[in-house]
Image (cartoon, rainbow, N blue to C red; front, side):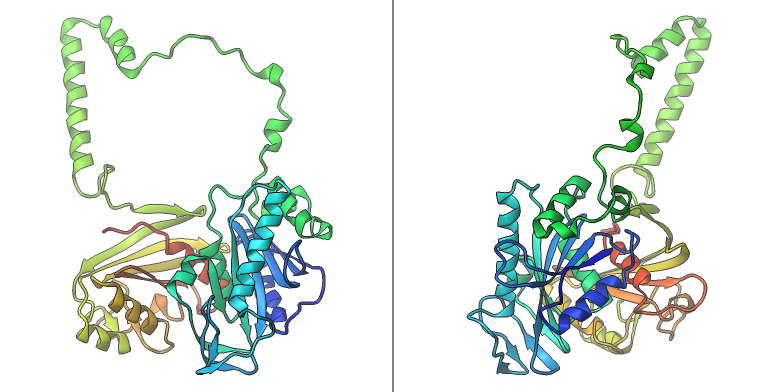
Length: 418
């Protein structure tokens, strides 16, 4: 990600926002995009701490300085916030989340009025100096608002959740957005922007190609596979035709068997290799069952003893990040209902609460040695909870390692057996 600082951030926590996104580094290996800090877009109610122009959309970041560090922050959009049970006294007539939503709406209108390609605009409220637990209504999350304490991992997770537009924003559209924010923000070359994940609509090879070298296309239909087969068989003796047709039927039967059996290439097969954002994940181990207690450890194991799961699928993948080999574990827990799934997600995100093991873990061990110090991300979708851990295949791992966190975030989108 490229960072442009047009002015001082309007809040103290804004400096943490800038430091968090700067740590992603230039290029699209972690996420990509351009961050414009200390900018006041047309129609915005205030100077914004940052606007993230990303290949998958735009994220407005509004900073809010709390009176002091908070243990529990209740942060709805439409009603006043509470900090540790007390109302938050905030400047202005609205709370910070609503102000961020209004800023996002103002920017979206400014882009529309200037004829810029319609891109989704979401909002993040960065709170500081610290908040241990932040609660938001599900309806606010669905509207594209995130309230968080900014760090490299929380900002990255929010960007991945909010900027999901496909296909990616093109280079020309990204430049138009930067110019609407501020003419000074459009300062990057074509190679720099394409390196940040904004595709160029016209590839250099095509732009420089000579049409004189393109052969004329004849208006003749290409023979189908059946037509080609008939032409070849026409010149064969009768016995040779029978042998050829028999061999073809045998191959067809074998293909049907492969398609229908588990692991074949037909519908419902288990995919052994997948790609997410251009990163390959090759499955090496898989396991499924219904005894989640036996496949977990710590407080999570005790929780499963009281709340048995309906199903558990565990897989391990080989992958790569930042030029290093990595191993990724994906566990999908089905609890049959959204309420226990939400409770499990909250427990899994509590430091020191334990977790779900990988298929190769020895009995009594929280994880096989390859996952010690792994980065972990947790996602709940209805009654299912997905737990992903990523670790370096060689050497020690750090749970806060940004490339590992980014790899784990990608693995959340892997297809798994239902």
